[in-house]
Image (cartoon, rainbow, N blue to C red):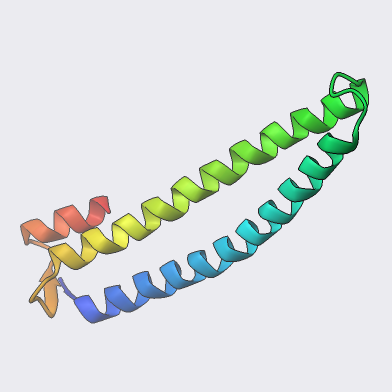
Length: 106
């Protein structure tokens, strides 16, 4: 079977663009919420107050989710780069070529 590298590239580029747009929104939201948390932290009398401890726990979960999302975005961008390296100079890829097996892993 034959696959046009341009078709694959367009799909990958579209996915990467959407991922980067979504990530930009998430990053802005994360930074805004982080700023609110830091303001709250500097205004609170005791960081050991049970209410603040609950918020701190939520903040840790939020940080973890954000860092996982950042890693995933970086992985997606890395996959795009790997694809481009594999298809340099090729307009088509055949399913029986070694590059195809590498592309399936990406």
